[in-house]
Length: 156
Image 1 (cartoon, rainbow, N blue to C red):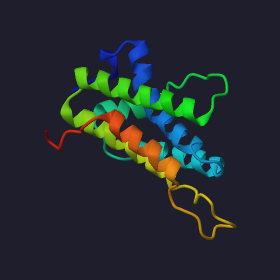
Image 2 (cartoon, rainbow, N blue to C red):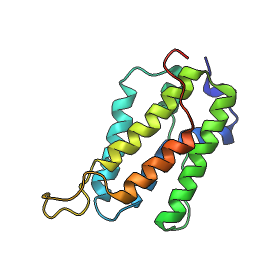
Image 3 (spheres, helix red, strand yellow):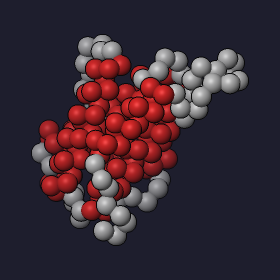
Image 4 (cartoon, rainbow, N blue to C red):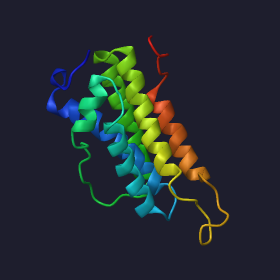
């Protein structure tokens, strides 16, 4: 069982910031809907606090996301920063966490990103038409999933 205490402050900031940064990158991938997408991210975090998770992810959810403010960046820069953060967090957890904790972390990251991607139909007019997940959002989702690396099977 891995605990927050096993990480230094910088490492914990990487672990807590990666899910939020990834979700922000998904929201920024396509214009429009950022209010809904932001609310969806907050709602997903809140709902996850009431679900059963490994102790590590529970501690992550109890911590404020470690996303540091940066000057305005474009979607491509944000995407690159998010992918790097997710890869770094996954690498850290790969060194310190159990397979179940690593899987739970990955499931949470993917879950919050998918919730953001599905929060607003892209290209719709007054809620009609459009795509549930736009190609740019899907591209970020795919990159985030790849940055997480292979996730262990449950109980593995």
